Length: 418
Ligand SMILES: Nc1ncnc2c1ncn2[C@@H]1O[C@H](COP(=O)(O)OP(=O)(O)O)[C@@H](O)[C@H]1O
Ligand SMILES: CC(=O)OP(=O)(O)O
Ligand SMILES: [Mg+2]
Image (cartoon, rainbow, N blue to C red; front, side):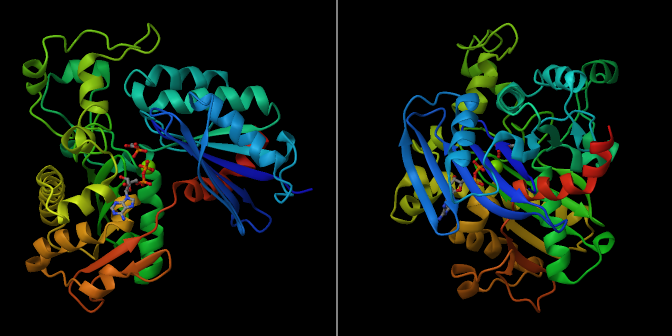
């Protein structure tokens, strides 16, 4: 019986898992399952396999990523329609999206040593890596014969040059504490690059993109000759654009005026997982949630166009920050830009945001197509501007789980040998 790959994307508030078969070297998705709302109970289940669909079914007793993984595994095994997965032993590889990979540059089998390395890295991104590591433990316990492989969201950005990744601080302290720009959403950018190269019929090493991954966490990447040369997130995913609950860039002094307790441990912080009040406030209590009361950017957009002032301001702030980065990256690329690419939940579904951004950059040689943008066609990559323009406007339906499964098959033989 052939085996499957589980691609696991543990976010700060959700766990998404895709199941792939891989008989012909290209992964084929069999099912996708997601538990969201881990930080705002009740958790909700979404499942799709062929015609079988469950949407936002409320679940009780799911409090953390480990519970979520155990529920997901049982659900997949119990689904009689998913004949490829009947027992944990049917899973050859579990691919884990690990947001902060420090210096790791390629997919890495997780053994005891790497696990401890990753644990140490959690200190740099406590709010992001912890969920993934909890799931690695759960897979180890429930699926003892499965090989765990880590895929790093920072790996794609290893090509960023020193002038872009260096912070202007004491270099000795920077080296000792590994303080530099790392960048994230790299699995998504790797997927976007390949998909756009295909769509544009170009060569990867000649492709220059300004790619926007706009989800709960949002970032932009400047891609030159197929490689990341800059991105908006930094040492941690807090930097750059605002997000669902993240402030994005603020003056670093701001936090000391916001609270006198900035350096104190946040409630829930433990000795192993140290989170300060400053990190908690700027990562979890800011962004769209703080500005509008909701993290749902679709809802914010709707209300903004109905005249809600707070939502309109949030929408305008996002557009302002996005076009600021596009301008900066346009200059870094000497104006030699094949396309601006919109991806992530907001980039793919938020046509009003795409329209607002496209209108502001039109003078640079982009040519928005209002109708095409409002009703984009099917497919992984779609033009949402006039394809004959000097620079294209594209929408890419990115898939981090599929990217991991593909990369997993590329290294599978090497990993099996070890
Ligand atoms: N029609 C829409 N217009 C704008 N934003 C939308 C729309 N539908 C969903 N979204 C937003 O997409 C975001 C989630 O993006 P996604 O990439 O799925 O998130 P995550 O980073 O959690 O993986 C949410 O803010 C959601 O509100
Ligand atoms: C890196 C990051 O921000 O991830 P997410 O968008 O899943 O929160
Ligand atoms: Mg995401």
